[in-house]
Image (cartoon, rainbow, N blue to C red; front, side, top):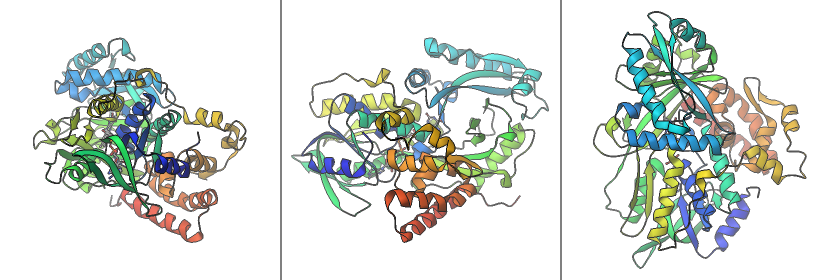
Length: 512
Ligand SMILES: Cc1cc2nc3c(=O)[nH]c(=O)nc-3n(C[C@H](O)[C@H](O)[C@H](O)COP(=O)(O)OP(=O)(O)OC[C@H]3O[C@@H](n4cnc5c(N)ncnc54)[C@H](O)[C@@H]3O)c2cc1C
């Protein structure tokens, strides 16, 4: 079924009671909707903005066990994540692939120390391992990563993990969920919870596009709103103690000439003990991340100057050519949904948390992208128990996720407009961006895109790859979307100016 907002809305309004309503359309929410729908439950998901507008579009793009958690001794969590990494490599090969990492060694003890850690990492992955970790000498290291700082380099340890495009995996999850008969609505914030006989039995929500209010009923409601978890919990119980702590992480995006490699860089030896990655992605290098505790929570956070300086300082230590502010093509910030354990966010729980309120609101939060499927399985298991539904088997462990392009070919057999050859022939939307006008039309017709930002930030990754080029591409994008969605000239202009406003947060003040 091709996603059609009106059709989902008609269905949503006509169903008297859903089995499960999921609030939030990030990795956790979409994973949960897919799990629930594939068990045969009637499932409605409501997202206040666009799918992936929150943290799920702003990750480091790694499907990984998390070597840093190993250092913290959290073996159980690493093992769980490695198991999910193995599943994702099998279930979503169109969007998740193996990536080799190099850990550069500049001191005599680095090699044995990191080497032992990586051997443990290999062992924990067991049969789901991607490839063995290895030791490289100085020449081999520089051959693999020519952009590394050569001074004092003694060699490296290599290991394997997974890499992906986070919002493309979201599109896959959404399309697979729809294939399993879930209904998904973006731009549909939940504004309140419905209670009857002391139980949460539905949600109040508003269609942001029309301002119309709706009430949807369900046997059970699942809160999967990431850093906004407490705002939904407060709708259930105004006096509830907040459980979330956000920690901001930022990445700077540079030309790939800075590392000149297809291999990723992992730096475990930063000033404050954080791990920093240099990851090749869509022809660029992502360099991050930071970990700054934040009180203010928002869907579009902004990098702080101190965070940008921190990353540039570390890049200058490890790259032979030190990047300057003017080299930054884009900078993006995301907020980790951490569950409070104590004041230090680095020691806060990075595992996921599942709780059920007195009135039966199921909340699933924390965790990471890599473990979204396990989180979803646990949430639906608990929802079944909470709503006293007969337990059904979870089917997602070995479920192949839809490849959006194949899916679309299947769904549009008669539609020759949407074929790969058309994509190749279609003009690029900007000389610096490898996306075509065809990609924009497809994002609207097949991938729920409703705004210029949806297309340039999350269906394509233009905003993340080159913020200035994305702003320049916005006018043409609005024209094409206007044709597809019947926009007035005023709406097109509004879209372009709104996008330019958002893009300001992805640009860096240049004062080299
Ligand atoms: C900088 C950074 C790098 C990371 N890198 C990695 C990585 O490489 N690998 C990895 O495995 N993990 C990584 N993570 C962690 C991972 O990105 C998150 O754990 C995950 O994306 C959280 O997903 P979520 O669905 O819980 O939250 P979100 O993606 O934030 O989704 C919650 C959604 O709920 C919606 N919402 C809020 N309120 C309402 C409402 N009232 N009604 C309807 N909808 C609502 C929001 O709009 C949002 O879209 C990283 C995190 C950060 C911050």
